Image 1 (tube, rainbow, N blue to C red):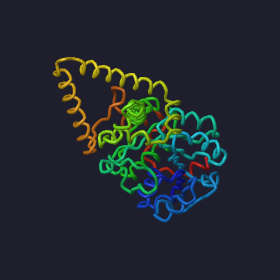
Image 2 (image 1 turned 120 degrees about the vertical axis):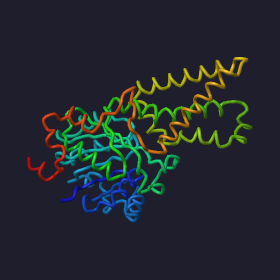
Image 3 (image 1 turned 45 degrees about the vertical axis):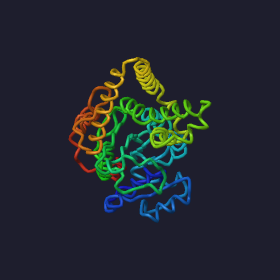
Length: 337
């Protein structure tokens, strides 16, 4: 019995998932949908999916897993459009940076017994510097040796969590569990703040009278720092910020405080405080770079704590179902209940 997977959104993330799962055709079948028919056809040609379904509601009919690899501004409307076609006990996954909001939308828009599990994929070490999006940048090993955070509402069935963890493992990543709210806090700092920082730098430079000369001399440091601005697109970034406002404000306040400290030290006659701070920050950044490229994480900190292990989350969330944790998920058996 193969698991039926539908991937909605066949850009870099969605198509990379499909490409990685091509090595597991005996375990699952892959159906794909994208707003662009041309993109969907190309994804099929490169074996990211086995079947294209051009009708969005029809693409999810009978699917055991539905992966929404979409920008944040498309999640709500897509869920609303497919709501009545998602079968009972299907698992809805998404890769957007707004987990609490997505979980709430699933609860509000879909009938009961449709289970939401949020994913936060991190690119594998070999692709850490890859900034371009789109189907042309999809890779079968995009997540290899990386981590993928998993977050679900309390009461999510053990089978849904097991299915998500198994899928992450097939992608070559390590599954790490987090609370929805905790993961939103992490995504505000790791994913949204860099884009807003890039926006602020563009604003601070292009609005100056000297921009006509600055633009001619701006080189790699400026290009690398500001490139994050186009990571998600304006509409998706605004949506993500709006649904994660408290965390984003907190991280912006931290950034403003750090900039104010640097400004104070730059204004001092002695260069020792600034030099010491920059050396410390460079050492910290180099340590992160080395850890990130090695992919050998023993613990990942979220708000001063550690992401719970698989067993810890399952014991907390599913209690009496613990004995079922290692039983293979059988969608047909679940459907007959």
